[in-house]
Image (cartoon, rainbow, N blue to C red; front, side, top):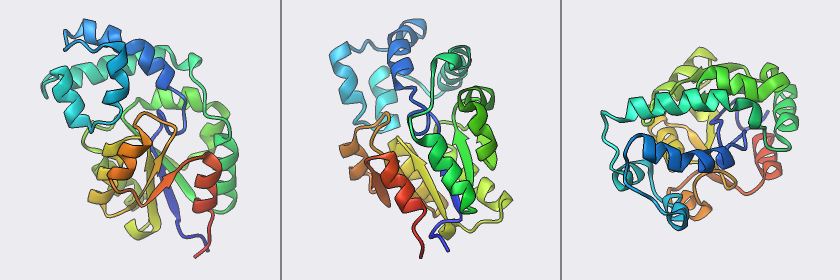
Length: 211
């Protein structure tokens, strides 16, 4: 029997290679919402910060956040055809399905956008719970596990941001941080994930490992 019965994935930067789109859209977002300017050479520094620190750096208030997130979701959906899954993701999801490991996607993005990028791989996902609040993923982690009849101890939550690790801890679940997404690997490691994955192959080996 495998160690985990349920793997909950973030989407952007974890399964989908959407960081280039985000980089291209970032300065436009700052201009649209009159946020604090960020030079191109400062972008890498933002990747080492938790979400709340990034908001403070950009002067984003909590009342602005829903509007910004909604706008970015709409723009992301419009650009979904330009974004693809990382190489190896469909094969990994297929392997998990064959082993009877349930999979879910909990994302701040819209389900429509996620499904469009997934394409045929959509059939490999057991459950979707999208439109997560920036700091509300732990509620969705718990709900998905409950709906799929899986205990927190049998669940791992995998993402590319510090807030994914934090949400998994609050939900009482293991966390997996991927080194190929938004946050810097050093920042992810400092947040204390259960596992830090440096490649999709390493992630698949861990998820398919037996007890």
